[in-house]
Image: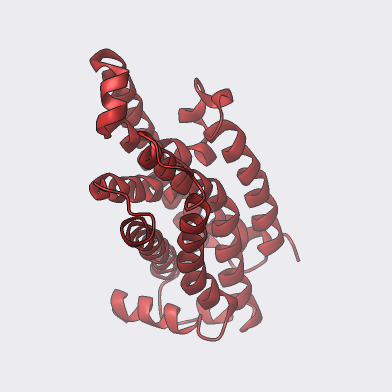
Length: 262
């Protein structure tokens, strides 16, 4: 079976499940809510900065719990469909299936985050009447949100398969609190680059520094310092994702379905 056919079959499995509802409804309702929320704000010089910060902060803080629920539901679906026997005894190699499932999860996240960002930009232009809109910075923020969250997909796919949906959601709930405290407050200013749950929040906020009003207020020296922090955080995020994915693939290749949570 080709990799594209594998991805297609995995997507078909989500038909008439809560997964489809999550990936279609949430990325539309969330930006609409944010547009409604910011419509009650008065215009100011930093209005677009506040919109950007609020939109990405709330989204990235929520990603740990959303990802844990999404991976948990997919794992639970496979378990109920035959106690993973379709995977363990199927014609597709286990590593190929594992990478395929992970790829599908990441693809869904990319599509949803980009869709939510586009809906938000549409609302800013036609409802909030923001002009000019720094749309390229919003798209950069969306991509950095994805980069910062990659490790969470690998981590929670492993946890949901090894320990079940309950464990995945429990750890995701803890990650939600960590991302809110370390990622969205000053508590994590010096340690966020070492905390995976804070990477999505922190990385998504860096494009704010490119906004003319903020860049002018910061000055060149402080701007360069923040740029170094961006590259440091991206390096940690990408390397950790690769390492955790390799470990998860090796583990799943040797896994025989005897889950500890049973």
